[in-house]
Amino acid sequence: GESVGLHLPTLSVQEGDNSIINCAYSNSASDYFIWYKQESGKGPQFIIDIRSNMDKRQGQRVTVLLNKTVKHLSLQIAATQPGDSAVYFCAESSAGGTSYGKLTFGQGTILTVHP
Amino acid sequence: NAGVTQTPKFQVLKTGQSMTLQCAQDMNHNSMYWYRQDPGMGLRLIYYSASEGTTDKGEVPNGYNVSRLNKREFSLRLESAAPSQTSVYFCASSEIYEQYFGPGTRLTVT
Image 1 (cartoon, rainbow over the protein chains, first blue to last red):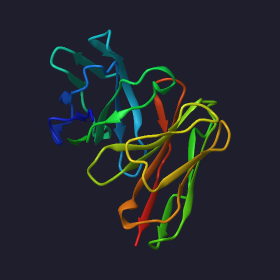
Image 2 (spheres, rainbow over the protein chains, first blue to last red):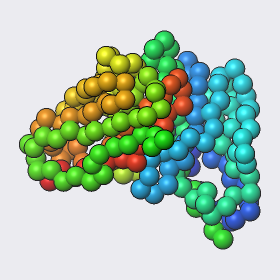
Image 3 (cartoon, rainbow over the protein chains, first blue to last red):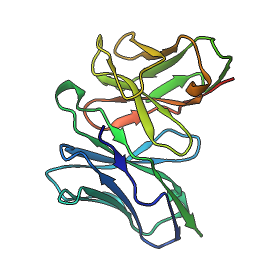
């Protein structure tokens, strides 16, 4: 079946740097994308989402970019802080109707922020 | 609001034993989900319920059953546990797109 994958399994940055986490997807019918942050021992926490009719969306210190031409998604974190250290997952949805909430998750990228 | 709650937090089973994982949400969401997460991997959908009274299989449903007891509660049952079901199980709920996750149940089958 279709899958969502990440280019980099680990990313190490210095505090204050900007971080970019990448994600490739293969299902051209995907129309909704979401990024989650998962800290050790906890459930995933919503960061930001984007619909396929957009190519950029900004939140607080985070920006998601969507390139549908090459089926690529990225999460940019500005001024990365030690509290940003976690596993980051992208997920996509392509189901319609009442099953719209079904998500397919990528494997995750471990972000480590060094003080 | 407690959000999504799961019980138990930890469980150890012997092969062949059965158990039910409980999940409840207080956000009045229509949809609920069960995922499993294995080490170094993303979440894989086991079953979901788009609304009260409906359930559907996800990516990895074999060995599991679910019950949408009411709008708040969605349980996952392992009838005969196997070592391959050792994993962390997450329940989630959503209104449309954004899913809210519980803290997880860490299950070990020996």
